[in-house]
Image (cartoon, rainbow, N blue to C red; front, side, top):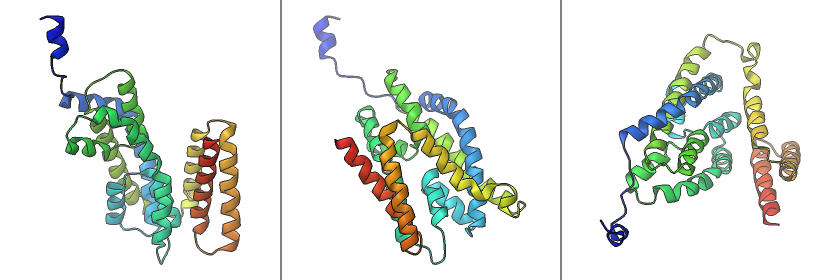
Length: 239
């Protein structure tokens, strides 16, 4: 075949195979194990927050976002502050817009069902593994589906397991789990630290949250703290 013929040849369609999904599941196995442990904590806390087993499984199965679900538990009360929960979880999950945008060129030529079906299983961990494949020049787009679906199964099943185990645990303070939400978000915060540029958004967010907590009833301090920190970070990045 001549050089001209090779240049005129149509580009090969993107691959989306079972072997690619299996490769993703294999690489995601260690992370799925850690997700299972965190999911068990969520299940225990969900039981003690007053959710039923069905509600716990439904939240984990539909939302599939650990940080947002822990935020929802922190806000959970009767009557349920729906507006505060929706708005706060929206702020927490806005990063997924940027994560999915980074994968757009890789999924551009796939059918929409495969693209959005894969993106449903995108969490921080499956995204990071997939970006490693993108940078390595891999071509099988089923990798995200394989890695993410394994993490999905780990998350939902662990939430149910933790919920059922919660009945035997009694007072959560005996196990230190009353501090679990605070500890989890502290660990997430440390992992997000990029340098001194992050200091101002964090300080503004914390200050606004404390002031709002003192002045307004309910859990609006979480919303106000999140929004103020986000706006501050955006303004600093634009400078």
